[in-house]
Image (cartoon, rainbow over all chains, first blue to last red):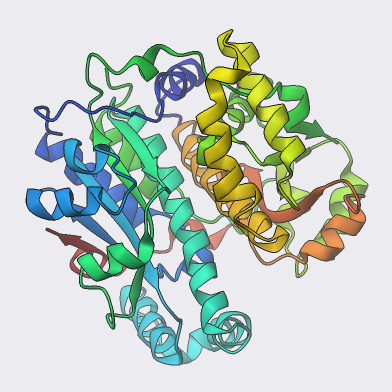
Length: 217
Length: 217
């Protein structure tokens, strides 16, 4: 049950590019934005733990202008329709694990004892097996799955994006009041509509040849 | 120019789950697999550098059986239709940068001197600004964008996936002959079709409430 043809999928991926200039007057319609928030929530993550929180900056224009200053002056942060800051847990604690196990038990109406082997696996692999810095990096990798999912989903809806790695995460944390919250900034992504004059829209896509990128065995 | 409605996008994302049991007799048709390879190639990456190579394991069944042993015995590796190993550069060198700048110049028919400011930015941010371990981690984050893109694209084509983080990357590198190649295993992803008897397919999706995942400002 495909929802789309291969050709349409590829056409949208060809259409997508890292938008440098957004049209500040065009806003993503509510129903589509709400769908994009849902795709963020539905993103797969390791063990299903969802070690993240997505900050959606849309209303507070002054806040977005302040963040431009911590993004190498890149205007996408302020000019796009919705700017998402992907934040991740700064550590993964046993309390996080308990909360997660209780969530599964409640959603699936199962006794928590039936989840003991999952609990042990996560305890060994993530909680006791990693330092806080490694846990944050693990969470960051998961956030990049969300970033990939978000950009592809947006392209399929005809919405432009620009991933924002060129940001100062510590300054973001300060500006967004994240210090001490247990969450830290990993990456940003601007979403909206390309400005008619963005010359990057028409540049040829630069990719290494498939023979260098794909190896079949 | 949306290629899909919000409702269809969400329906496919709801349909997707981490497939535990694949039907070993069902193979992804050539045309669709080729499209999925293209989506991998089209994945956005930081500075557009594409610090990866995608190994597609399809033909060599014995190799896939060996990898099951380095994947906590998870049968998805051998039973799926196509198994992708996302490998990344173990370091990013100035030679990589030169190759990349020359690629842009050639694709866009521009003198390399016109790319000097980009070169300087990457030199400072990635080549000189990071240790090899940090470069590999940077590359790994990019690979997770590809992973997110891949799983979403597959779901839209009605193709099942299972991300495979529970693998032994060092053993993968050994088995796949990657040592000394400049590439190392980061993560895997199985693609194909769920087995009729996979009981995980019908389990309710477990997500924290939107109010805990999304914060609007």
